[in-house]
Length: 221
Image (cartoon, rainbow, N blue to C red; front, side, top):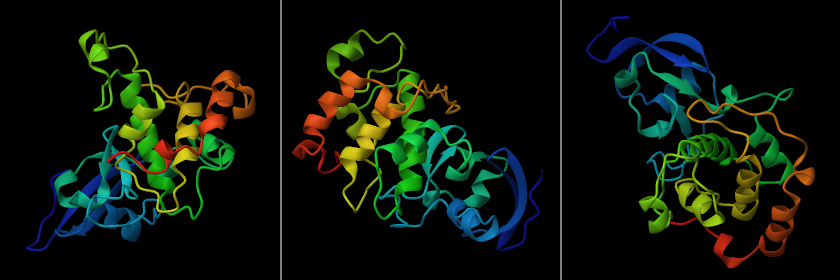
């Protein structure tokens, strides 16, 4: 649609969680403001409001974005996914289930952003995108196959999401559990074969032995 404009506002359409919403927004409003204040989607949190903590993370056209830095007026027609669009209590997303099973949260304020960012990250890895932590020899033989997610890779790829409670070891464990159940771009969830306690038992035993190691005490920066 052609936005209706005044000197200070515009009417536009945002496609959020597969639903079209036509709203009139102040030109200064961010996507985060619109989600929370006009669409009543309060899962995305306003933490730092400077794009540094990741609490406001959404998927914009399938890619991770800090919604506090996105001017709504510049995103007419955009397709967004928030944490509310990933799953619900009856049918949670595999990563939501893994967060619960791994106790990957404390106060919960950062959790929606962690989960949405984690889904986006797993999609990027499934598409074979490297990170700063990807070894050089892997880059040289890059074939577009899914990236292997070591714990170092996960920490680096999630370094834009802060947890002030320090639940990083459990967040990494949850992402490892869910890594085989998310497909490219869409965040498509593949059915889990069973609860985390029944999956990847060898990897779990190794993880339990060093879950509280110093390397997981803080995110890579």
